[in-house]
Length: 336
Image 1 (cartoon, rainbow, N blue to C red):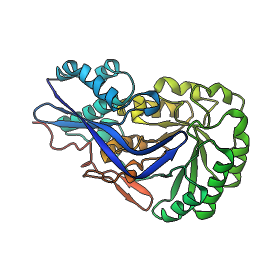
Image 2 (image 1 turned 180 degrees about the vertical axis):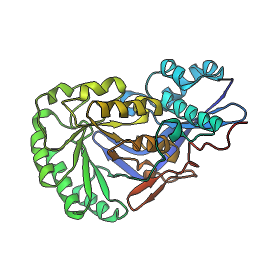
Image 3 (image 1 turned 90 degrees about the horizontal axis):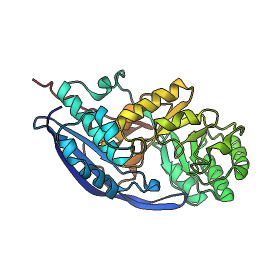
Protein backbone atom coordinates (compact mmCIF):
# COMPACT_ATOMS: atom_id res chain seq x y z
CA UNK A 1 0.00 0.00 0.00
CA UNK A 2 2.82 2.44 0.83
CA UNK A 3 3.09 5.16 3.43
CA UNK A 4 0.32 7.73 3.72
CA UNK A 5 -0.14 11.10 5.33
CA UNK A 6 -3.41 11.54 7.20
CA UNK A 7 -4.98 14.96 7.71
CA UNK A 8 -8.08 15.36 9.89
CA UNK A 9 -10.09 18.58 10.24
CA UNK A 10 -13.23 19.45 12.20
CA UNK A 11 -15.58 21.94 10.51
CA UNK A 12 -18.86 23.55 11.60
CA UNK A 13 -21.58 23.69 8.92
CA UNK A 14 -24.31 26.24 9.80
CA UNK A 15 -27.83 25.54 8.54
CA UNK A 16 -29.97 28.03 6.65
CA UNK A 17 -32.67 27.55 9.29
CA UNK A 18 -33.27 25.29 12.34
CA UNK A 19 -34.28 21.73 11.44
CA UNK A 20 -36.63 19.71 13.66
CA UNK A 21 -37.18 15.96 13.95
CA UNK A 22 -38.62 13.79 16.73
CA UNK A 23 -36.72 14.73 19.88
CA UNK A 24 -34.10 17.01 18.30
CA UNK A 25 -33.68 20.47 16.80
CA UNK A 26 -30.51 21.25 14.82
CA UNK A 27 -29.15 24.66 13.77
CA UNK A 28 -25.98 23.30 12.21
CA UNK A 29 -23.73 20.29 11.98
CA UNK A 30 -20.14 19.50 12.89
CA UNK A 31 -18.32 17.25 10.43
CA UNK A 32 -14.86 15.77 10.02
CA UNK A 33 -12.89 15.96 6.78
CA UNK A 34 -10.27 13.23 6.42
CA UNK A 35 -7.60 13.24 3.72
CA UNK A 36 -5.04 10.57 2.86
CA UNK A 37 -2.08 11.51 0.66
CA UNK A 38 0.66 9.29 -0.69
CA UNK A 39 2.72 12.17 -2.08
CA UNK A 40 1.26 11.86 -5.58
CA UNK A 41 -2.43 11.21 -5.07
CA UNK A 42 -4.99 12.31 -2.53
CA UNK A 43 -8.27 10.88 -1.31
CA UNK A 44 -10.96 12.64 0.73
CA UNK A 45 -13.84 11.64 2.94
CA UNK A 46 -16.37 13.39 5.18
CA UNK A 47 -18.30 12.16 8.20
CA UNK A 48 -20.70 13.55 10.78
CA UNK A 49 -20.98 10.38 12.86
CA UNK A 50 -24.26 9.13 14.32
CA UNK A 51 -25.55 11.57 16.94
CA UNK A 52 -28.09 9.23 18.54
CA UNK A 53 -25.37 6.63 19.19
CA UNK A 54 -22.96 9.11 20.79
CA UNK A 55 -20.74 8.96 17.71
CA UNK A 56 -20.02 12.67 17.29
CA UNK A 57 -17.14 14.48 15.63
CA UNK A 58 -14.99 14.36 18.76
CA UNK A 59 -15.31 10.58 18.80
CA UNK A 60 -14.57 10.45 15.07
CA UNK A 61 -11.47 12.59 15.50
CA UNK A 62 -10.26 10.56 18.47
CA UNK A 63 -10.71 7.24 16.64
CA UNK A 64 -8.73 8.41 13.63
CA UNK A 65 -5.96 9.90 15.76
CA UNK A 66 -5.70 6.76 17.90
CA UNK A 67 -4.90 4.74 14.76
CA UNK A 68 -2.81 7.38 12.99
CA UNK A 69 0.40 5.33 13.01
CA UNK A 70 -1.33 2.27 11.54
CA UNK A 71 -3.10 4.36 8.91
CA UNK A 72 0.02 6.27 7.91
CA UNK A 73 2.06 3.07 7.71
CA UNK A 74 -0.24 2.16 4.82
CA UNK A 75 -3.73 0.68 4.98
CA UNK A 76 -6.25 -0.51 2.41
CA UNK A 77 -10.02 -0.71 2.58
CA UNK A 78 -10.04 -4.39 3.49
CA UNK A 79 -7.75 -3.87 6.48
CA UNK A 80 -9.80 -0.85 7.54
CA UNK A 81 -12.89 -3.01 8.07
CA UNK A 82 -11.21 -4.74 11.02
CA UNK A 83 -9.23 -1.70 12.24
CA UNK A 84 -12.27 0.49 12.96
CA UNK A 85 -15.88 -0.34 13.86
CA UNK A 86 -18.84 0.95 11.88
CA UNK A 87 -19.42 4.67 12.34
CA UNK A 88 -18.20 8.06 11.27
CA UNK A 89 -14.45 7.49 11.58
CA UNK A 90 -14.47 4.45 9.34
CA UNK A 91 -16.78 6.20 6.89
CA UNK A 92 -14.49 9.20 6.45
CA UNK A 93 -11.39 7.05 6.01
CA UNK A 94 -13.06 4.43 3.82
CA UNK A 95 -14.32 7.07 1.40
CA UNK A 96 -10.90 8.72 1.34
CA UNK A 97 -9.31 5.38 0.47
CA UNK A 98 -11.81 4.81 -2.35
CA UNK A 99 -10.88 8.13 -3.91
CA UNK A 100 -7.18 7.46 -3.41
CA UNK A 101 -7.55 4.10 -5.16
CA UNK A 102 -9.40 5.84 -7.99
CA UNK A 103 -6.59 8.34 -8.47
CA UNK A 104 -3.91 5.66 -8.34
CA UNK A 105 -5.64 3.28 -10.73
CA UNK A 106 -6.95 5.80 -13.21
CA UNK A 107 -10.46 4.33 -12.80
CA UNK A 108 -13.49 6.21 -11.44
CA UNK A 109 -15.01 4.92 -8.20
CA UNK A 110 -18.16 3.65 -9.89
CA UNK A 111 -16.00 1.41 -12.08
CA UNK A 112 -13.96 0.17 -9.12
CA UNK A 113 -17.29 -0.69 -7.46
CA UNK A 114 -18.33 -2.82 -10.43
CA UNK A 115 -21.18 -0.52 -11.45
CA UNK A 116 -22.22 0.86 -14.84
CA UNK A 117 -21.71 4.58 -15.52
CA UNK A 118 -23.85 6.56 -13.06
CA UNK A 119 -27.04 8.36 -14.01
CA UNK A 120 -28.97 11.23 -12.39
CA UNK A 121 -31.29 10.10 -9.61
CA UNK A 122 -34.64 11.34 -8.35
CA UNK A 123 -34.09 12.50 -4.77
CA UNK A 124 -36.43 13.36 -1.95
CA UNK A 125 -36.33 16.81 -0.39
CA UNK A 126 -37.00 16.89 3.34
CA UNK A 127 -39.44 19.02 5.31
CA UNK A 128 -38.60 19.39 8.99
CA UNK A 129 -41.26 18.75 11.61
CA UNK A 130 -43.01 22.12 12.00
CA UNK A 131 -46.65 23.18 12.15
CA UNK A 132 -48.91 21.73 9.49
CA UNK A 133 -49.34 25.15 7.88
CA UNK A 134 -45.62 25.83 7.87
CA UNK A 135 -44.89 22.48 6.25
CA UNK A 136 -47.61 22.98 3.64
CA UNK A 137 -46.23 26.41 2.76
CA UNK A 138 -42.72 24.95 2.51
CA UNK A 139 -43.99 22.15 0.28
CA UNK A 140 -45.58 24.66 -2.09
CA UNK A 141 -42.34 26.61 -2.19
CA UNK A 142 -40.29 23.49 -2.93
CA UNK A 143 -41.08 23.72 -6.63
CA UNK A 144 -37.83 21.95 -7.53
CA UNK A 145 -38.95 18.87 -5.60
CA UNK A 146 -40.86 16.02 -7.21
CA UNK A 147 -40.48 13.84 -4.10
CA UNK A 148 -40.95 15.02 -0.51
CA UNK A 149 -39.98 13.44 2.79
CA UNK A 150 -41.86 14.66 5.87
CA UNK A 151 -40.35 14.50 9.33
CA UNK A 152 -42.84 13.49 12.01
CA UNK A 153 -42.54 13.67 15.80
CA UNK A 154 -44.75 10.91 17.20
CA UNK A 155 -47.51 13.38 18.16
CA UNK A 156 -50.26 11.51 16.36
CA UNK A 157 -52.83 14.27 15.92
CA UNK A 158 -50.24 16.79 14.78
CA UNK A 159 -48.51 14.29 12.51
CA UNK A 160 -51.79 13.49 10.78
CA UNK A 161 -52.43 17.21 10.29
CA UNK A 162 -48.95 17.58 8.81
CA UNK A 163 -49.47 14.76 6.32
CA UNK A 164 -52.88 16.00 5.22
CA UNK A 165 -51.72 19.59 4.85
CA UNK A 166 -48.70 18.70 2.73
CA UNK A 167 -50.69 16.38 0.51
CA UNK A 168 -53.26 19.11 -0.07
CA UNK A 169 -50.47 21.53 -0.91
CA UNK A 170 -48.69 19.11 -3.24
CA UNK A 171 -51.16 16.65 -4.79
CA UNK A 172 -48.59 15.95 -7.51
CA UNK A 173 -45.65 14.90 -5.34
CA UNK A 174 -44.37 11.51 -4.21
CA UNK A 175 -44.47 11.64 -0.41
CA UNK A 176 -42.75 9.55 2.23
CA UNK A 177 -42.72 10.17 5.98
CA UNK A 178 -40.06 9.57 8.62
CA UNK A 179 -41.20 8.97 12.21
CA UNK A 180 -37.64 8.88 13.60
CA UNK A 181 -38.62 6.23 16.19
CA UNK A 182 -41.53 8.35 17.44
CA UNK A 183 -44.27 5.68 17.69
CA UNK A 184 -45.06 2.47 19.51
CA UNK A 185 -46.87 -0.45 17.93
CA UNK A 186 -50.18 0.44 19.62
CA UNK A 187 -50.29 3.90 18.06
CA UNK A 188 -49.16 2.92 14.60
CA UNK A 189 -52.38 1.76 12.95
CA UNK A 190 -54.27 5.11 13.00
CA UNK A 191 -51.28 6.83 11.40
CA UNK A 192 -51.00 4.18 8.71
CA UNK A 193 -54.72 4.50 7.90
CA UNK A 194 -54.19 8.20 7.18
CA UNK A 195 -51.04 7.52 5.16
CA UNK A 196 -53.05 5.23 2.90
CA UNK A 197 -55.76 7.88 2.46
CA UNK A 198 -53.18 10.53 1.58
CA UNK A 199 -51.24 8.36 -0.87
CA UNK A 200 -48.05 8.28 1.19
CA UNK A 201 -45.57 5.85 -0.33
CA UNK A 202 -43.53 4.80 2.69
CA UNK A 203 -43.11 5.11 6.46
CA UNK A 204 -39.57 5.24 7.78
CA UNK A 205 -38.53 3.94 11.21
CA UNK A 206 -41.86 4.11 13.09
CA UNK A 207 -40.64 2.27 16.22
CA UNK A 208 -37.65 2.67 18.48
CA UNK A 209 -34.48 0.82 17.59
CA UNK A 210 -34.53 -2.45 19.52
CA UNK A 211 -38.31 -2.89 19.14
CA UNK A 212 -38.13 -4.57 15.74
CA UNK A 213 -39.76 -7.75 17.05
CA UNK A 214 -42.93 -5.74 17.73
CA UNK A 215 -43.47 -5.78 13.97
CA UNK A 216 -43.68 -9.58 13.83
CA UNK A 217 -47.10 -10.36 12.40
CA UNK A 218 -47.87 -6.68 11.81
CA UNK A 219 -49.22 -6.06 8.32
CA UNK A 220 -48.90 -2.60 6.80
CA UNK A 221 -50.22 -1.53 3.38
CA UNK A 222 -47.62 1.26 3.51
CA UNK A 223 -44.06 -0.07 3.15
CA UNK A 224 -42.04 0.23 6.36
CA UNK A 225 -38.43 1.36 6.03
CA UNK A 226 -35.66 0.48 8.50
CA UNK A 227 -33.29 3.33 9.31
CA UNK A 228 -32.10 3.33 12.92
CA UNK A 229 -32.91 -0.40 12.94
CA UNK A 230 -30.44 -0.97 10.09
CA UNK A 231 -26.98 0.16 11.10
CA UNK A 232 -24.70 -2.36 9.38
CA UNK A 233 -24.59 -5.41 7.15
CA UNK A 234 -25.13 -7.61 10.21
CA UNK A 235 -28.60 -6.09 10.72
CA UNK A 236 -29.97 -6.72 7.24
CA UNK A 237 -31.10 -10.34 7.61
CA UNK A 238 -33.15 -9.50 10.71
CA UNK A 239 -35.23 -6.98 8.77
CA UNK A 240 -36.84 -9.58 6.53
CA UNK A 241 -40.54 -10.00 7.35
CA UNK A 242 -40.60 -6.82 9.42
CA UNK A 243 -39.57 -4.11 6.96
CA UNK A 244 -39.87 -3.70 3.21
CA UNK A 245 -36.72 -1.67 2.69
CA UNK A 246 -33.42 -0.75 4.32
CA UNK A 247 -32.15 2.84 4.49
CA UNK A 248 -28.36 2.82 4.09
CA UNK A 249 -26.39 5.75 5.49
CA UNK A 250 -22.62 5.67 5.22
CA UNK A 251 -22.06 7.30 8.60
CA UNK A 252 -24.02 4.46 10.19
CA UNK A 253 -22.47 1.53 8.38
CA UNK A 254 -18.94 2.90 8.20
CA UNK A 255 -18.36 3.78 4.58
CA UNK A 256 -18.96 3.02 0.94
CA UNK A 257 -17.46 -0.47 1.19
CA UNK A 258 -20.09 -1.66 3.67
CA UNK A 259 -22.83 0.44 2.09
CA UNK A 260 -22.44 -1.38 -1.22
CA UNK A 261 -22.36 -4.73 0.58
CA UNK A 262 -25.59 -3.85 2.42
CA UNK A 263 -27.34 -2.84 -0.80
CA UNK A 264 -26.39 -6.07 -2.52
CA UNK A 265 -27.32 -8.24 0.46
CA UNK A 266 -30.68 -6.49 0.84
CA UNK A 267 -31.43 -7.17 -2.81
CA UNK A 268 -30.44 -10.82 -2.38
CA UNK A 269 -32.88 -11.14 0.53
CA UNK A 270 -35.73 -9.51 -1.37
CA UNK A 271 -35.65 -6.16 0.43
CA UNK A 272 -35.82 -2.79 -1.25
CA UNK A 273 -32.93 -0.38 -0.87
CA UNK A 274 -32.84 3.30 0.03
CA UNK A 275 -29.86 5.58 0.54
CA UNK A 276 -30.01 8.47 3.01
CA UNK A 277 -27.72 10.95 4.67
CA UNK A 278 -26.91 12.61 7.99
CA UNK A 279 -26.70 15.99 6.20
CA UNK A 280 -23.31 17.23 5.00
CA UNK A 281 -21.58 18.81 2.05
CA UNK A 282 -21.45 17.55 -1.51
CA UNK A 283 -18.32 15.64 -0.52
CA UNK A 284 -20.44 13.56 1.89
CA UNK A 285 -23.21 12.99 -0.67
CA UNK A 286 -20.88 11.85 -3.48
CA UNK A 287 -20.11 8.33 -2.18
CA UNK A 288 -23.78 7.90 -1.29
CA UNK A 289 -24.63 8.84 -4.88
CA UNK A 290 -22.66 5.74 -5.90
CA UNK A 291 -24.80 3.59 -3.55
CA UNK A 292 -27.84 5.37 -4.95
CA UNK A 293 -27.25 3.73 -8.31
CA UNK A 294 -28.43 0.48 -6.66
CA UNK A 295 -31.41 2.01 -4.83
CA UNK A 296 -35.18 2.29 -5.19
CA UNK A 297 -35.42 5.50 -3.14
CA UNK A 298 -32.78 8.21 -2.84
CA UNK A 299 -32.66 10.83 -0.07
CA UNK A 300 -29.55 12.92 -0.72
CA UNK A 301 -30.65 16.50 -0.14
CA UNK A 302 -28.20 17.20 2.70
CA UNK A 303 -26.35 20.15 1.15
CA UNK A 304 -29.62 22.02 0.59
CA UNK A 305 -29.83 22.65 4.35
CA UNK A 306 -26.43 24.37 4.50
CA UNK A 307 -25.69 28.07 4.34
CA UNK A 308 -22.65 27.19 2.27
CA UNK A 309 -21.70 24.02 0.38
CA UNK A 310 -18.00 24.19 -0.54
CA UNK A 311 -17.33 23.71 -4.27
CA UNK A 312 -17.20 21.64 -6.35
CA UNK A 313 -20.83 20.83 -5.67
CA UNK A 314 -23.42 18.33 -6.77
CA UNK A 315 -26.28 19.55 -8.97
CA UNK A 316 -29.99 19.57 -8.17
CA UNK A 317 -32.35 20.12 -11.11
CA UNK A 318 -35.96 19.09 -11.79
CA UNK A 319 -36.02 17.05 -8.60
CA UNK A 320 -32.92 15.09 -9.59
CA UNK A 321 -29.43 14.88 -8.14
CA UNK A 322 -26.31 14.57 -10.27
CA UNK A 323 -22.80 14.16 -8.93
CA UNK A 324 -19.99 14.77 -11.36
CA UNK A 325 -16.72 12.91 -10.79
CA UNK A 326 -15.00 16.23 -10.15
CA UNK A 327 -16.84 16.44 -6.81
CA UNK A 328 -15.31 13.17 -5.58
CA UNK A 329 -14.08 9.92 -7.02
CA UNK A 330 -12.49 11.30 -10.16
CA UNK A 331 -9.93 8.94 -11.63
CA UNK A 332 -7.70 11.83 -12.62
CA UNK A 333 -4.78 10.72 -14.75
CA UNK A 334 -3.58 7.13 -14.54
CA UNK A 335 -0.53 6.57 -12.39
CA UNK A 336 2.66 6.21 -14.41
